Length: 303
Ligand SMILES: [Zn+2]
Image 1 (cartoon, rainbow, N blue to C red):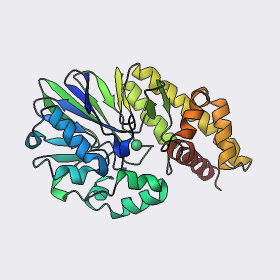
Image 2: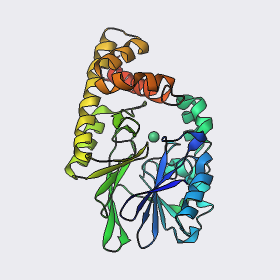
Image 3: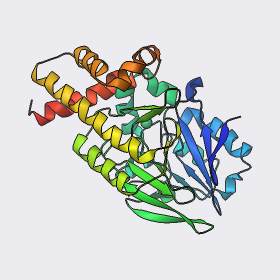
Image 4: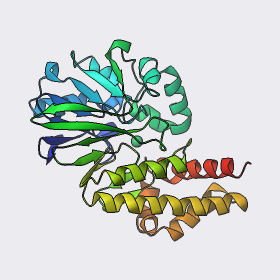
């Protein structure tokens, strides 16, 4: 079983990329036509397709695959997925579009940022240009008087989109609202370089103003108390920013900065052992996300 019902007309597909559970998921909105959110990475497209079969989704019926952004874990598999969905088009931010059509540069930069994790996700295949729909803001009809609204929420990436669906009043934030760890019911930052704190905070204000009731994280799953979580995430980003700014001023190493974050951020303190022993999060959250803040702070301090 790859799938789980998480709301009215809404299903989560556990992608189990690289055999890792609770790491990456896609969503299927069953409106008048099936609407997918996130292709996930190339290597777990077979799991997504078996999830679609489990949900009785006919491949030729899928009209849209909306990707929150083009990073390998969200939109990397779009090209491979479209080979099985003959009528589907990909919705993406205009700044992400070139990377879907020609993923070579994205692949080489992902290899240098993610290291071994890029191989777990897999190399993206190109999406034919005529099958890409660039969108910054707009709405899509889901049928049954429901709609999906696209909102630009940059910061994590210069091209992150969020999608709000009106069946349940939930938002798919991509990586604009952090990584949700369902095992602990907490959120941690998703802030690899290049990370833009000011834009990320402004995007969170945008999401808060939409007053969603639930969040559907791509990492990982549905979380309630959406507005409170978004507000808490803003405070968490601000705390990490304060610590790293001090660290950059005092020339701390990445390890020293990370140590201070774990000591001062209650959430990180609680889950530090889990994160340190996690094959993926030890590299992404504990290293890349801290580095994102350090580089932002250095840039801000002009060094
Ligand atoms: Zn991600």
